[in-house]
Length: 191
Image 1 (spheres, one colour):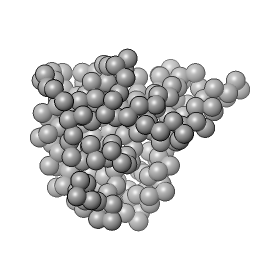
Image 2: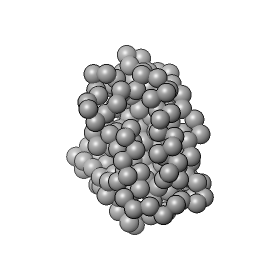
Image 3: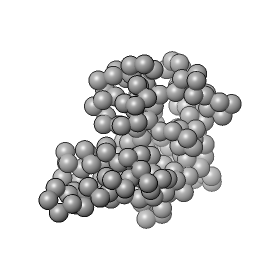
């Protein structure tokens, strides 16, 4: 099962579900409004996708029904509290993320943050070094970072993120990939 956290308009969920009809793909976002069109499209009798599900939930409060179900989690160009939680390794975001992942599950985070986006809470990401600072706090939650690298515009387009395209990620502004996996053992922590 694949979970797309911070799915936005849900188009990436539809694309993933269409490319792998035997796999359930769940889109989660705090805003129901953005997912309405994709949810309706997935239910169409003619070309609907029975292998999709859309859930309204904030990353900080993911439903317990999703505990340990995902073998893959994608987060494509997050914004707001999800982006802040990922870049500052907030316990409330990382604990929920780890909780929904099976041991060994893959995590793919694509992001783009420039100086104009950052605030006191959000560090700018100008090079891989800014993201390498996340390796230790992610590891403390059982997330083993396996790669950090810049993304090309073609990779941003291939990800299917409407928001990434609108940002001009990989073209007008740098874009980054963080790849990780959930370790087999996760230390008991409290958020």
